[in-house]
Length: 333
Image 1 (tube, rainbow, N blue to C red):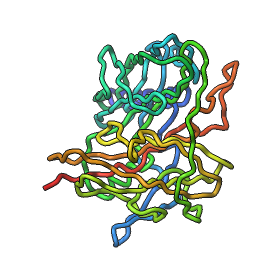
Image 2: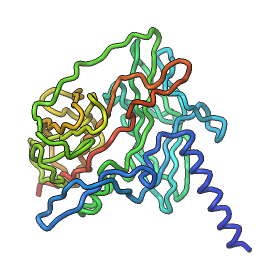
Image 3: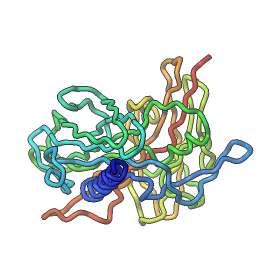
Image 4: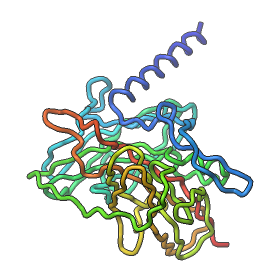
């Protein structure tokens, strides 16, 4: 009798999580949304294949109050007076404990922010199997005007597994978040300058982002020996829109770094059925005794309106960001 009750309770919890994810979160549930997968061949390289799911399941949502069923918000645009405050819902619908690293970007620049009253650039939490948690988040000192705000969550951030299988499993995966727009005081709207990447690949094999060591050569870059200056390329493809704008954010150990020279955020555009490549450089200021994690995040359609009055969502936008493979930077030994 006790076993049947436990089984029934497990089913109820699972269905509840599924309902919460569907209604209140922007889903990065790879069981629902297929992502690019890659296969390693004998030479150690990989080729981009078709969509395939990865075995992860976690939820991220935005709430007005820490209450299920009543506290969730579907709004994508918020008016504030310099400070944004809400509750972030994180659910570990996985049958093992996991760590989650929370970060925030305002206009695609990483900023310190409060989680449950603590101010930091990133916030690490650990959730037990099937555990969920509400976190009170606060972003202060928002300048006047429109802002894109992204609150992101990395699953299993400090897993330094070097196997090909693990590294490939992080492609377009193991990251979720909530992207919204915040209007602080007056609705002043400013757009950055978008540039076309300098290298056109002459083909249209991909859609999204792939970080490699050579331009337009789709071989997975999984790990690299430490060096003070590591040159690489960010490949971008577009199969859906006549013209797609994008923003790129690079992170080393989950802290934002420049992409090239003094460029902290790269704003670009790409035409339909076109692959392009952006030369970039990872500058390592010091070595570490541990593996370091490097990732580039692709944000499509930055700064475009997410919602129109009265609360009509802009369904033509692709608002989910796509993280690249987590590239392991090996210790200098």
